[in-house]
Image 1: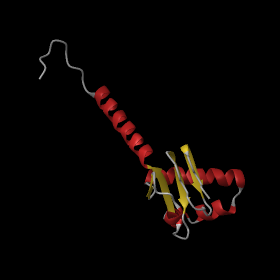
Image 2: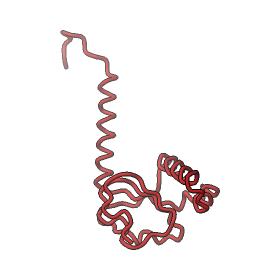
Image 3: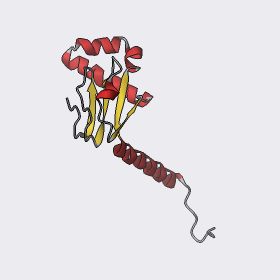
Image 4: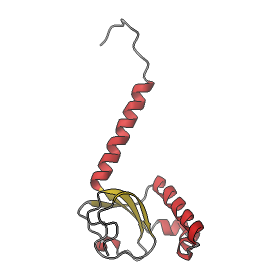
Length: 130
Protein backbone atom coordinates (compact mmCIF):
# COMPACT_ATOMS: atom_id res chain seq x y z
CA UNK A 1 0.00 0.00 0.00
CA UNK A 2 0.96 3.68 -0.51
CA UNK A 3 3.63 3.14 -3.19
CA UNK A 4 5.43 6.35 -4.23
CA UNK A 5 3.69 8.20 -1.40
CA UNK A 6 5.20 11.69 -1.10
CA UNK A 7 7.68 10.95 -3.91
CA UNK A 8 9.50 14.15 -4.91
CA UNK A 9 11.92 13.02 -7.63
CA UNK A 10 13.56 10.17 -9.48
CA UNK A 11 12.14 7.35 -11.54
CA UNK A 12 10.35 4.22 -10.32
CA UNK A 13 9.48 1.11 -12.32
CA UNK A 14 6.94 -1.27 -10.80
CA UNK A 15 6.75 -4.73 -12.37
CA UNK A 16 4.56 -6.25 -9.67
CA UNK A 17 1.19 -5.55 -8.12
CA UNK A 18 0.54 -2.29 -6.32
CA UNK A 19 -1.46 -1.79 -3.19
CA UNK A 20 -4.06 0.88 -2.61
CA UNK A 21 -3.46 4.63 -2.49
CA UNK A 22 -0.55 4.60 -4.96
CA UNK A 23 1.00 8.05 -5.54
CA UNK A 24 -0.70 9.79 -2.60
CA UNK A 25 1.08 13.11 -2.23
CA UNK A 26 3.39 12.41 -5.18
CA UNK A 27 4.72 15.82 -6.25
CA UNK A 28 7.75 14.93 -8.37
CA UNK A 29 9.46 12.18 -10.29
CA UNK A 30 7.90 9.66 -12.64
CA UNK A 31 6.62 6.14 -12.04
CA UNK A 32 6.00 3.49 -14.66
CA UNK A 33 3.66 0.74 -13.52
CA UNK A 34 3.02 -2.54 -15.32
CA UNK A 35 -0.77 -2.86 -15.11
CA UNK A 36 -1.24 -6.46 -16.18
CA UNK A 37 -4.83 -6.79 -15.00
CA UNK A 38 -6.10 -3.28 -15.80
CA UNK A 39 -6.93 -2.29 -12.22
CA UNK A 40 -4.19 0.19 -11.48
CA UNK A 41 -6.35 3.33 -11.89
CA UNK A 42 -8.66 2.13 -9.11
CA UNK A 43 -5.66 1.71 -6.78
CA UNK A 44 -4.29 5.23 -7.41
CA UNK A 45 -4.74 8.40 -5.49
CA UNK A 46 -5.46 10.72 -8.43
CA UNK A 47 -5.34 13.92 -6.38
CA UNK A 48 -2.00 15.19 -7.69
CA UNK A 49 -1.20 12.97 -10.67
CA UNK A 50 -2.23 12.07 -14.19
CA UNK A 51 -2.03 8.62 -15.72
CA UNK A 52 -0.59 8.58 -19.22
CA UNK A 53 0.53 6.19 -21.90
CA UNK A 54 4.36 6.17 -22.06
CA UNK A 55 5.80 8.15 -24.99
CA UNK A 56 8.45 6.71 -27.32
CA UNK A 57 11.12 8.45 -25.24
CA UNK A 58 9.59 6.99 -22.07
CA UNK A 59 9.59 3.53 -23.67
CA UNK A 60 13.33 3.77 -24.40
CA UNK A 61 14.11 4.82 -20.84
CA UNK A 62 11.79 2.21 -19.39
CA UNK A 63 13.35 -0.59 -21.44
CA UNK A 64 16.86 0.50 -20.41
CA UNK A 65 15.89 0.50 -16.74
CA UNK A 66 14.34 -2.96 -16.96
CA UNK A 67 17.37 -4.28 -18.87
CA UNK A 68 19.64 -2.90 -16.14
CA UNK A 69 17.42 -4.49 -13.49
CA UNK A 70 17.69 -7.83 -15.29
CA UNK A 71 21.50 -7.61 -15.46
CA UNK A 72 21.78 -6.90 -11.73
CA UNK A 73 19.08 -9.25 -10.42
CA UNK A 74 18.42 -11.95 -13.06
CA UNK A 75 14.73 -11.23 -12.41
CA UNK A 76 12.52 -13.75 -14.24
CA UNK A 77 9.76 -11.12 -14.35
CA UNK A 78 12.05 -8.58 -16.03
CA UNK A 79 13.06 -11.23 -18.56
CA UNK A 80 9.42 -12.04 -19.37
CA UNK A 81 8.60 -8.35 -19.78
CA UNK A 82 11.55 -7.80 -22.12
CA UNK A 83 10.93 -11.01 -24.10
CA UNK A 84 7.40 -9.79 -24.88
CA UNK A 85 8.28 -6.10 -25.05
CA UNK A 86 5.55 -4.87 -27.42
CA UNK A 87 2.81 -6.56 -25.40
CA UNK A 88 4.35 -5.49 -22.10
CA UNK A 89 4.79 -1.87 -23.14
CA UNK A 90 1.09 -1.63 -23.96
CA UNK A 91 0.33 -2.49 -20.32
CA UNK A 92 2.56 0.16 -18.74
CA UNK A 93 1.04 3.28 -17.22
CA UNK A 94 3.06 6.44 -16.68
CA UNK A 95 2.30 8.19 -13.41
CA UNK A 96 3.06 11.90 -13.74
CA UNK A 97 2.49 14.52 -11.04
CA UNK A 98 0.53 17.42 -12.57
CA UNK A 99 2.67 20.23 -11.13
CA UNK A 100 5.92 18.41 -11.96
CA UNK A 101 4.77 18.01 -15.56
CA UNK A 102 4.01 21.75 -15.74
CA UNK A 103 7.51 22.59 -14.44
CA UNK A 104 9.17 20.23 -16.95
CA UNK A 105 7.17 21.74 -19.82
CA UNK A 106 8.09 25.29 -18.74
CA UNK A 107 11.76 24.30 -18.50
CA UNK A 108 11.68 22.79 -22.01
CA UNK A 109 10.02 25.94 -23.39
CA UNK A 110 12.67 28.14 -21.74
CA UNK A 111 15.45 25.95 -23.18
CA UNK A 112 13.95 26.19 -26.68
CA UNK A 113 13.68 29.98 -26.35
CA UNK A 114 17.32 30.20 -25.21
CA UNK A 115 18.44 28.15 -28.23
CA UNK A 116 16.45 30.42 -30.55
CA UNK A 117 18.07 33.51 -29.02
CA UNK A 118 21.57 32.02 -29.39
CA UNK A 119 21.01 31.05 -33.03
CA UNK A 120 19.49 34.35 -34.20
CA UNK A 121 21.97 36.60 -36.01
CA UNK A 122 23.03 39.64 -34.01
CA UNK A 123 21.84 43.05 -35.15
CA UNK A 124 24.71 45.19 -36.50
CA UNK A 125 25.61 48.09 -34.26
CA UNK A 126 23.83 51.27 -35.31
CA UNK A 127 21.29 49.40 -37.44
CA UNK A 128 17.75 50.78 -37.30
CA UNK A 129 15.43 48.85 -35.01
CA UNK A 130 11.83 48.12 -35.88
